[in-house]
Image (cartoon, rainbow, N blue to C red; front, side, top):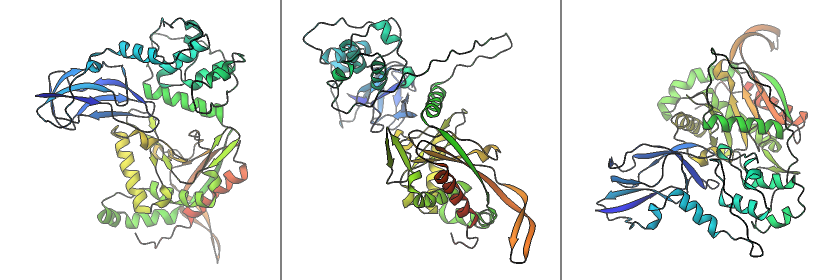
Length: 439
């Protein structure tokens, strides 16, 4: 019998650690190959980590709520396999506080002065880099505890420290921080306006529900987007009768041929991709005073989860896909999103987002931009309505399938002309859908 270490796998370029939220296997229990061991949460997505070996779980190296770094062992499994056998070292048996202490000691500290280690009186976690910045800038623990954090579960990040130091009016702060990282430091932002919150009274008839981790992240991202971008929304109504008739005619044949259900979403996404090709400036992001036009079209599709939360999986390189490819990607990502099986990379690097508010019977909406993108499209419910139809013989009234498109865009870089022309072009493409198109 031999013991192997189960390590935290890599989950995306920007994901460096994960919070272990729940153990799924008890110590001493049998573990099958690829059986989920733990549930984890990152600032990108929640997921499960499967076992890379079969055997017995002999030791849990972390507790629920602990933060585990990528590549760090979090469990020991006893197995008869000789593959990838790792002799247990002192590392797995080291407790989390000892690991954090060892990391902080190894960080460079100015030799010209001795600094007193920061000892937090709260349960708030600070990374070694944040603590090192605080020590070099002579930030007391009480002052550090008062800095608002934008990271996972309210943690203070390096950017939070930079923003705070920029507003601390310390003339040497920026110069000393440049020695900490080789990367170019982002511009500091002005101090946010502090608005006092109104008092909320609670009676015995009220129900108090604590926000879960995902809801907190959604709340932070939505407020941040509104504070970052100057939102403007344009509305266009589209006659999608030809599109509806074509889908009704071919959906059964499409499913038999491709083993995929054909919904309206990939058809709309196909039109969005074509419109982006014609108006590439809408497929962009903002970096300070620079506008970055993206070379690839990575479409985010807002997806409602059974919990009531929202997540936005991304279809990468959508410009290279035909209708079947888009259909397959939409169905796969939506299904795995609802099963909590998305990978962190699958909700990153979106360049434009589409949200289907029509799923809930809404005819239109004012969607919030998914930062750092500059625009988002909401599609309303398709409804039958009487409408004027122009014919060579004259105008007439007919029953048509109508849909509203709501386009929110960042008025800092997208003017009304571009924002309006883009959504109008999407509507035109949907209205001109070829009812005789082969599948």
